[in-house]
Every structure is written in structure tokens, then in C-alpha cells.
Image (cartoon, rainbow, N blue to C red; front, side, top):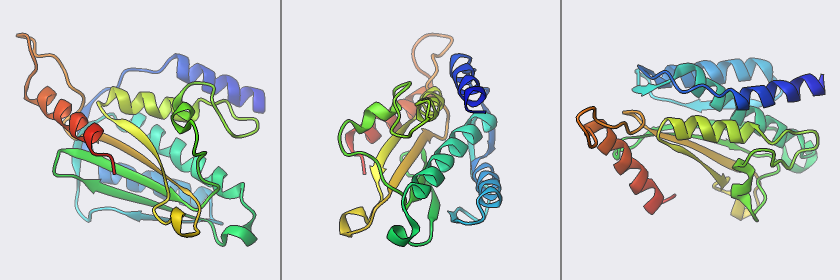
Length: 207
């Protein structure tokens, strides 16, 4: 079973498809993934903070669903790594935000063991893992998916981790217009400029 899982992850990473972008409801996509993860992990409290109405963006529904599933799965494993008498009930909060700069931001916040403080960004590299038996490809796949959407992934501490708490906040973000594309006539079109501006603003002011 372990070997089969590892081979599947290696194959998925090696054959990562380019996103097939379409206008779709990202809020509903997140809602469906959270529902499935809640059913699969009844011992955990998994909450969602989503808009009541639709939130349309340009993205690949299948790939974004895979990325979010990977991140929530990592959160469940991080929670399981901490004895319950130390952390209390396991909890994962999925928070959606549409920002004024044109970015879709999805935070997955857990009360698990947290992320290592040193060389944290190395966890996004292929084959880097802190989990026994892990392939180190889960976050690498997520990072590639978000990069192909013109966005990225940030590995942060849980907001209250500095106040005696523990846990991680993994942030997925991408421009709602999709990745920057070259204009057929040369140069960048409006969509490309919007995506590039979102990335520049994010890099200049991480929160």
C-alpha cells in the first residue's frame, strides 16, 4: 500500500498537466472539498468561512480541488501527530477571502504540530518531508498547481501560535483572472497585467 501510494504520487508529479482554465465558482469548489474532508474525518472539526453567494474566478476546478485536498490532508496528519491531551480537539478552519487587489486567498488553519521554523520554504521542494513515510511531493504538487494559476503558496504559523498555541496556516492564492498570458499581438493584455500586479503586491506585502 505504501509503495503503491508513493508510485502514484511520483507519477502525478511527473505528469502534472497544464491547467484547463474556465470561469467557475471557486467558493462552491472549496465548499465541496471541505464537505468531503469532513465526511472522511468525522473525529475532527472542519469549518468553512465562505461567501453566501457564488464567487467566480478563472481556474482549473480539478487541479485546485487536488491542491486544497492535499493541504487539508496534510493538516489532518499534523493534528494526528500531536497527542490529544496536548492539543485538545482537532480543528481545521478553511477561510476564503477575495481581496481588493484581485487575488483569491484560501487559508487552511490547523492546531496540529505546526511547521518547522527553519528552512520552511524547502518543504515546497520535491522530496522534502518532515513526516515518516512521506514522499515530500504533496506540497510540491500544490505549489506547482498554484504557480500554473499565476499564484503561490505561503507556509505560515497559526495566527495565535505565538500566544501559547500551536499549528499552521497554509495560504493558497491566485489572481481571479488567471495566470498572466502573452497577448497574441505582443506584450501583455489586461488579464496579464492584473495577474502580474497581484503577484507584485503580494510579494511586497506578505501578511
